Each structure stands twice: as C-alpha cells, then as structure tokens.
Length: 274
Image 1 (cartoon, rainbow, N blue to C red):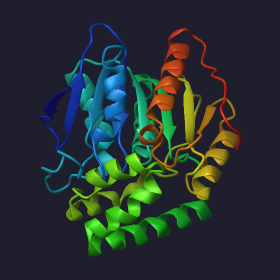
Image 2 (image 1 turned 180 degrees about the horizontal axis):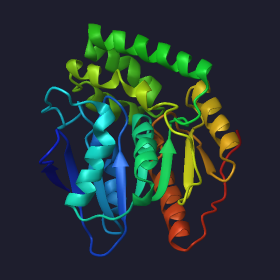
Image 3 (image 1 turned 135 degrees about the horizontal axis):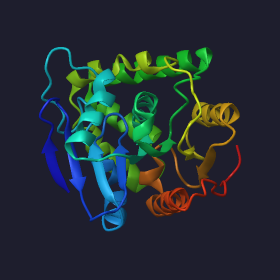
C-alpha cells in the first residue's frame, strides 16, 4: 500500500487502488495502527480499492500541532476522500475505529456505502451507566500506560485479542504507542450522545467476539434493540479485535456483507445469539 501524508492534517493514510472497484475504509483500534488490518489488506487488495488511516497519535500520525484533536478525525477523513476523489466508502471500524466510523457517518452520511462496527457501541444511544463503567475502565488502563507502556501493552493484549497470535501481534503494535498520545483519547466522550440516529440510507453491520468482555456483549445487544434492522454477527473463538483473532471468518463475513449491499440485498444471516 502507498502511504500518503495528508497536506492539511497530521494524518498519514494508506491507499491501494485496483481499477474501478468500490472503496473500503478501515479504521483501527486504540493503541495500535492500520497494520491491525494486514490480513484484510492481503485478502481484499485485488477485489476492492482500499483506504486506511492511522488515527491521530497512532502509527505515523504523530506530527501534530496545537489544536489538533481526535474530534477532527471525521473532517480529516472527509478531506482525504476529496483528495483521492472518492465519493463513497464502505467503512469498517474496530473498537476506537467503530466510534470514529460512527462519528463520520453522523457527519457525512452521503459518503457512506455501508457501515460495519466491531467491538464498539452505539455512540448515539450509549446508556449513562454503561458509559460511566466504560470510562472508569478506560481511565484505569490509561493509568497503567502512564506508568509503563510495556506493562500496559502486556495487560491490554489479553483484553484486546483472544488467540495467542493475535495477542502477540497486538502487543507488538501497542508497545510502540507514544505515551504522550494518550491525551488525544481524552475527548472521545465528546462524540457520545451528540447526535440522534436518523434513518440510515446505508446498511449497518455490528458485532464482536464471543470472548469479548461482558459489557461489550451487552452494548451490542442494546444497539440491536435500538436499531432492529441492523445485522449482528458474533464470532466464535474471538475476543475484542475480531479481525485479528479470526481473519478468515471475518474476511468472508465482510465479503458477503458487501456483495449483499452491491446486489441490493442488505440482509445477511446472523451468526450466533446474544
């Protein structure tokens, strides 16, 4: 993939073109970078045009200026789409990426072909109690990162992935996370319960791994309840970062979903039970 430094933001993004195919945008989880989608890049690079970003403070997106915040990610992504002459994208977000994917869809719905969120929650209808519990756990994890990124990465890999290989891969990326970049995650709450969900003009797919934390499973259940037309997929033998734990199953799920979108059939058989 070709890396490009955005001309008007701190964001570095990555592009792989394959003719007139549809575009897929991948947005990664916190503390890692776009490389968490390596298995997806390899599988889809000859089938779709691919766009991936390093979120502010992560990977190669660390050349920041005063006033740069994570809340500007949606605007920066929109600018990238314009620079690459991309009208619409299928968006895939995992964990933090799922939050940013929804924020982009809230702000630029006309640019979304479909939305797929994994290991996330409905940012437009996030229960206050669950939100407070989530914030408390995030603060505890960040405290570990302030003390030692390596200590934090060792603990975080078991929360973020289920299989040994995925845990090792996650750790290798997490340990490179700059401690100073924690400040960019502090304003994530500003995206929560800011918009009301209107009628979506694109299909929505949500899901997580069966070995994700119980609160995540509850968040997916609540999201399905508020948007019954969405499709839910629970992945066996997977934790939080499902695309890393079970890449083959994940890739096939996404391929089926996108083919259904292209064919005008937004329904996909749901896997597992909540």
